[in-house]
Image (tube, rainbow, N blue to C red; front, side):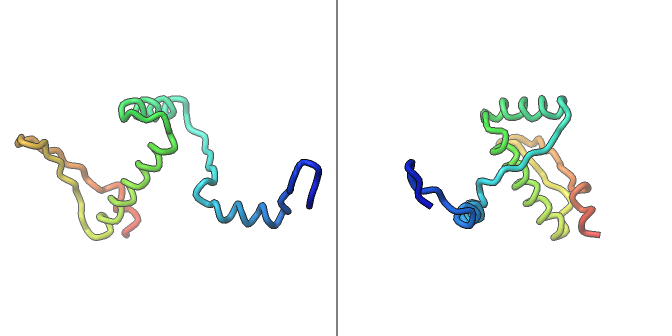
Length: 99
């Protein structure tokens, strides 16, 4: 369809472009003000202003932990380099899907 101001894509062309560009689809959800403040605080600590990037990282970390939980791992050990101090993270909340 041609107009004086250029080509206007048809509905079919727009739908194809939308499906081809799946990476950039938006998702929105509502959170409590306290949760939003917590996310903003964590983003600031990490040094990112992009909440979506931060949440994407959190999701990918959780996916990896879920994978290990499905393989039977129950905890993650974190140790400071050059120190004997260790911390343990337990996967109890991730193992619910395995039962």
